[in-house]
Image 1 (cartoon, rainbow, N blue to C red):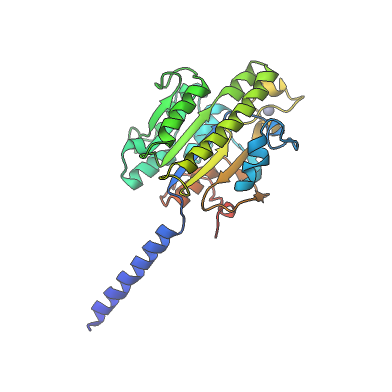
Image 2: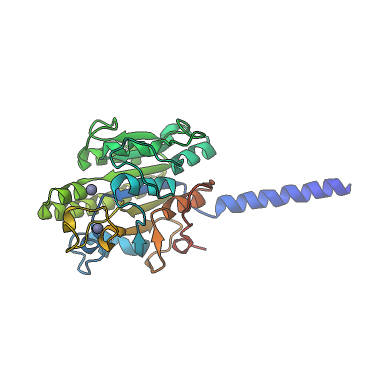
Length: 312
Ligand SMILES: [Zn+2]
Ligand SMILES: [Zn+2]
């Protein structure tokens, strides 16, 4: 055989093996990010009795990998926190939904790499202003590969809607045989009742989100398309002031540990069960982790791949 043909054959065998190895390295085909807006760590996993989050803190936590030291190291507001998740970059961005993130999002990178229809990346949010997460100011990416959104009471990017309605949309998508491969969900009640200085309703909303999170995981595992192929990230955009800092639980937005210290729980087929991780993690790491497990590049993300939460 001609030496060139031998070389070509070896090259083809090698690249096929490499491609298989790459495709087989993770079982994850779907990713869901659930953002519970603004609970304080002291009322969730930081409470050793797990009083308000009995499912997440005392049961689901042991089904996956939990980060004890997970932070928002940027601006501790809703839009900046969510933009840090979706773009992998901390930036100063209006919290009123009047400007787009500077950098392209993981949804855009995913849609470009996969060639999928824009309904394959979905943002479902109780807060209408989170509609800005689908697009970017970046000239190369502006209006390109824009995810589908259902944000706010009418799904049109305006106002604040009820979590119940948001979750109905989530249910429709997650029980579908055509479920989106990347989805971000925002639930607002915890934050809204915090701002209203309603301690009772704030606590009740944390418990309601505990149930939503559990139902979401059950629905994922009941959908034959998503079952054992979905990684769920349960996190927050920010916490709230510690008691004694400014108005305490009523507000947030500073650098106190109450505002910065949030949570991340990762559940999925590639994540070991019962893992408590002491290593630091932060919001911008979520995008890099998703791009790694779904095999697309995200060069503008400044986060790191949260390798310790995945099977070697
Ligand atoms: Zn808030
Ligand atoms: Zn604070």
